Amino acid sequence: MATNSSVASHYIMSHEHQRSLPTSSCIPWFAVLSIESLAIVILNFITITVFVKQRQLQRKSTYLIIHLAIVDLLVGAVSGPMLIHLLFCSCYGKSCNITFSRISLAIRTCFPFTSLVNLAFISFERVHATYRPFKHRLIKKWVYGLVIAFIYLSAICKSTIEAVTNWLFNFIWVISSYSGLLVLMCICYISIYIKVRCSRQHQLNGAAGLRERKLTRTLFLVTIASLLTFLPGVIVNIMIFFHIMSFSNWSTPLTITGTIMTLFFANSLINPILYAVRMPEFRAGISKMVFCRTPQDHRNPVEYPLRDL
Image (cartoon, helix red, strand yellow):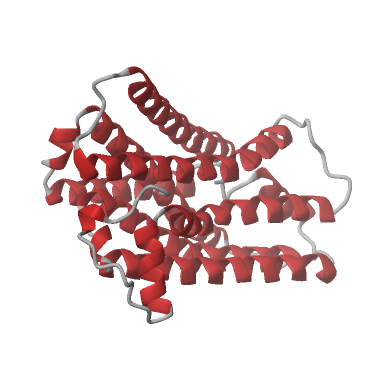
């Protein structure tokens, strides 16, 4: 995920460069971001519905995944349209009230950051499931509710700081917070890999243990996807900040910002696709909901085939 307050965006919206951009350069990005936001809403709505209705997916390990889908849906429904409005103002030279701009920035970046924090807590939960499997099964439901409340609290605090501070501190704060969370997630999954590979005793009993390991692999791929959508924005922003990269014409910062934002929102679009590819129960739920097909296999959830998860 890339920061919504990218340096390229700042360049376009700066007062000394504030003039309309060519319509031919803006319309394609309007279309791309609009289609992507709509796809995010639709796919994550399907994800939420499947996880809630599919019995095989109704377990504590999926609570944070369901919440992640809800937050990603809000990314497409709220952050996406607000970003498109910002792009509209940038392209047609519309000036925005400074107070409105700061409030818009706080709201626009809240849900993407919430999604990243949620992924970080999923990583912590996977570490706990790997190192303390039996204690993990005894975690109460209210603990997940407390974690979700903390996720929103941290996102609100981050957005508030981002809205009231100056641009330089804003940039450093955003890059460091996003990067720090991604580093923590990488550390979590590296520790899981070491535990699984090096510990002979890490052989969880039965189908429940197999499901946890398969789920961990799927969520690892989700985290890697987030990392890949975030890094381009970080690299480009840092290069612009230290004047390693410069703009020779007006279309260049718009192209860079549009590409970064497309990758940024792709983070909320990739997750449902990965679930569909990796989780047989999820595919069965989609088939039942979308195509009104009831799976022929009525085996016990514990016996449900997970070998290709």
